[in-house]
Image (cartoon, rainbow, N blue to C red; front, side, top):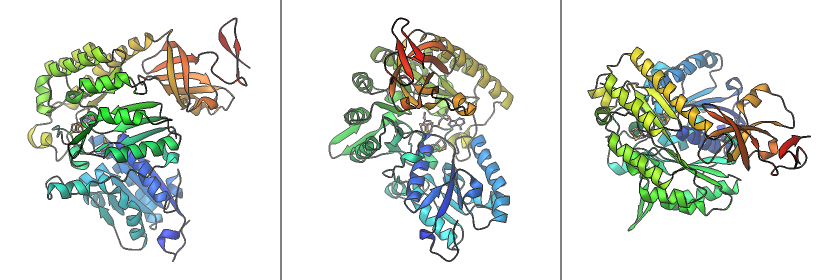
Length: 491
Ligand code: SAH
Ligand code: SF4
Ligand code: F3S
């Protein structure tokens, strides 16, 4: 625990960090922990044991923010009893709500936007040195010259901490920050600032660091990852070029990229994915709505027909790919007829899965300024349930088609059920994913974690394939081959 009167930077210091939101935030948290560890901070998993409690937040829907304010409310008592503890709000909510957070949650000492996270350590020190509340934010989208705004949204990605990742052999790698699409409902262009591609040299160097750390699967991140462009002189690097470059790195076995923007799903990109065996056969390309009128109000920049053409391109070039989507139900002005368009597109596109969200009006967005939030919550809820039920039925039907097939699985670790049961035998239920991103559970030993194994699928539920390891690939201690039966026998 910290001792009085010593300079902050040499005290042993315990850190607790809770993360909300998307993959970008998961990655940001990894970076924050890596940079604080380099200042001798130690990570703990109990906020009560921590000297600094940081919450990395999300503003995408009101519900996400309410959860954080509720957590901050609970921390108020703790702060009263232990005023020396530093409480910090990081991430998108910090950038969006700024000092309003101090007003609504008086126990907060520190507010750091996603573009200023490299400041976190210095700012914690300042709070501990009695310099009062600290805040580091990026410039708003109209708060200065374009270059200054861009520079105020910086990443500090080269710091990687494998211990912070759920599995050390899987990692996110940011290739793009920010977003310039300005969908009318969305806060991200405000919280994450202008779209900026990172340089291919930096991205490649980081991919090599990850491979050296034993990472086998890299997921490239960007809000519209397939719009990635990086210009150096007269050369432009695209996502397809990056995939080809990272594909060469020894040790990396799988490459994914999220999230895709429908209009930029080009044939050259699809051909690249087809030609590079390490690229996952999986594309997350949110449609958001199956009604042209709503897509226009959302300012998504494409029509249902164009999305359909994109699906045809995917089927033509990558017939074995799984496509997943996001939908917003109950957006401003959405009629029953508009909603039926979304129902129809789920039926037609047969997505592997869809994330379905009730529209949540966000202060500061174009929709909040110009479009009434006029669909009653009850209607949003019913539409949400209906799309979910339809998507679940499709997911289950498609998963059933895998029964009897062998799939290659990157083993991630014990399944949720195995972790919950807490039983530690030599054989436990493991989970992993296929190249088309389907979740598979099967029995095996811990030694398989991080490996690519072949699994024969016996059953398929809505969200999971259930199978067994194909004979002959596992060590002799725990499995032996019964050649007559062609099955695995547990010893
Ligand atoms: N950049 C990604 C999505 C980022 S946000 C893309 O453009 O696809 C993740 C998802 O949250 C979005 O795809 C959208 O479906 C949903 N979302 C964003 N803003 C929302 C809002 N105001 N209300 C409800 N859902 C929202
Ligand atoms: Fe938000 Fe649209 Fe940008 Fe995605 S593309 S982050 S939904 S503004
Ligand atoms: Fe949320 Fe920010 Fe991600 S608003 S979804 S954490 S980019």
